[in-house]
Image (cartoon, rainbow, N blue to C red; front, side, top):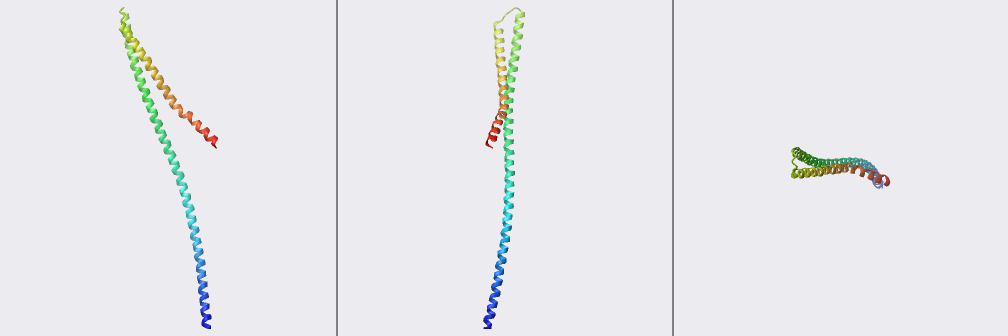
Length: 162
């Protein structure tokens, strides 16, 4: 019987050791789980910060693209306006030459109808070119003002949504 008591005592001691190991393993697993949860939260925070930075960079990029488009549009308007101004200068030069020829013919007392016609054509062309310059300037001004006029509409919509 003493062997049975000895075996029972050894089995009980082994079971106590196993129970202690299982308890320690559970505590170790809980510690590991807590560390993993903390690391996961840190990674989520880092991911959120990177997402915010990425969105800020994307917004800045979109703004730069819009600025580049606005500059390209402004350059196109300036080019169109410059062409119209050149046309106006050319028409004005023709008008001056026609008027000078007409004055010279009048001083000689010879009224030449083709000079009068040429002067009238040059004057009409100068008027058309002047009108084209006015239209180009007005279009340029309107194009520059449109973004300013549209901006308050979006701001008022954002305020009404809030």
